[in-house]
Image (cartoon, rainbow, N blue to C red; front, top):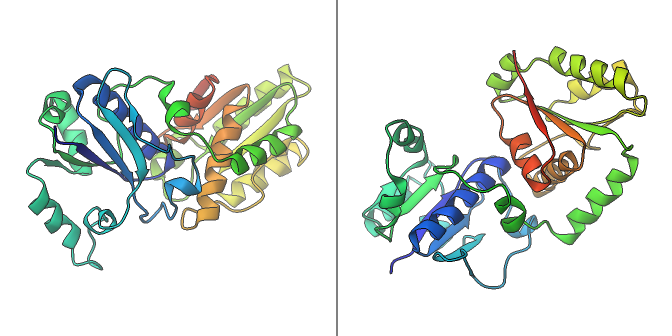
Length: 283
C-alpha cells in the first residue's frame, strides 16, 4: 500500500488546517499519510522548533498510519518549493517520482468543481502541496496533532499572569494581507473594545497583530495597563518570530472571546486549541 504524501505550505494557521485535513483523509481511506513540514519563505522554522514530534507514526484511529514531521535528507531536495534559485528542479523530480500530483493553487478550483479528494487519495502514492484544507475535520485534531514544546507552554503561562478574569483577544491582521485591511478596519475593533469596556470594568485585552502602529493606537486609546501585546515585532523570517506567533496563538486561545480579522486563518486556528468563542469582524 503506497503512502500518500502532503507537503505543507503557507503560514502557521494554514499548515495546521492542512495537517488536520490530511489526518482525516488517512482515517477515511486507510492509506498511510506522510505530512512533511519544510522551511520556506514565510516559515523559516522547523516543526520541531515549535512542537513535540511523536517518536513513531501513529494510527489515524481506524484508518491508515499517519506521520507529521520535518522533511529529512533527500526529502528536503525533492520537496523543496520550486523557485528560480533552484532552477525548479524539485518540480521535475516530483514529476519523475509521482504519477498523481495536485499542487496548492489547484485545490481551490478542484473544490469549486466538486472534485472527490477521497477517491483520489485512495489510489495511494499521491503527492499534494497544500496551504488550504481540502475536507472537513474535527476541531479536536489541532491540540491532538500540535503539542507545543514545554518552553513555549511556560512562556504562555507566564504571560497569562497579566490576564484578568475577563480578558478578550483581538487578532488584527495587517501588513501583507490587503483583504483583512479592507474588510476589517481598526474602527471595528475599537467599537468592540468600547462595548466590552462598558460591560466589564476589569476588561483586559490581548492584542495580537503584525503591525506596530496598531499596537500604538490601542495603547494610546485604552492605556498600556489594559492592552497587552507581544514584546517584539512580528516577523515570519526567523525561528524566534514564528515561535512568537505560536505563543500569540496560544494566548488568544486562553482569552474569554476572540475577535478576529477577515481573510486570516490565525484566529480561527487559535480557538481550536480551547473552544473559545470567535467573532470575525468585517464590514
